[in-house]
Amino acid sequence: AVCGIGLFLGIFVKFEAHNYFAKLLLMAAIFFVTLMPLAHDTSVTILYGAPHSMMYLYLRRMAVTVSLFILSGLLYLFKVPERFAPGMFDYIGCSHNIMHVIVAFNFVYHYNTLWAWMEAHKYQSFGYLNE
Image (cartoon, rainbow, N blue to C red; front, side):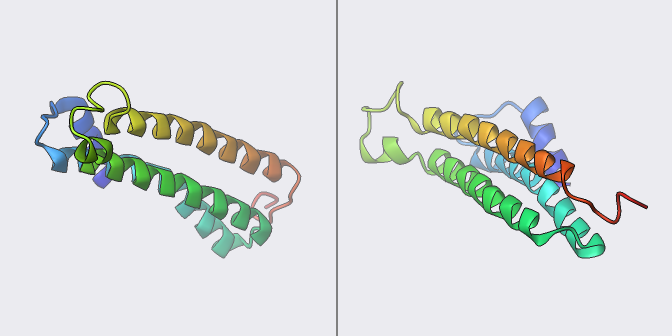
């Protein structure tokens, strides 16, 4: 539900500078979409007994991904550089720019995480795949 609301807001609602709640809902939707593979893999591990070493690899990398999303959201929400030096970060180095750089890095890191997860799946046998 949160994902649907956030995506609706991102597509159909024009964000205004003072509308932080709508921005927060959109960031929460992106955050929950990131957590969906983690919830799926946790349920597979519990139900079918997937190897724990792969799960821990994924959990560590997902912790970094989630932490970066939270960091970028907080920097953007609280206008961190602009708040401490007004007028200095109007165009370059503002919280919006920093948020985009962190999110872009995070997408690349998340892609590499999923690629490593798929590569590890090639060489491991799971009971639920052999049924």
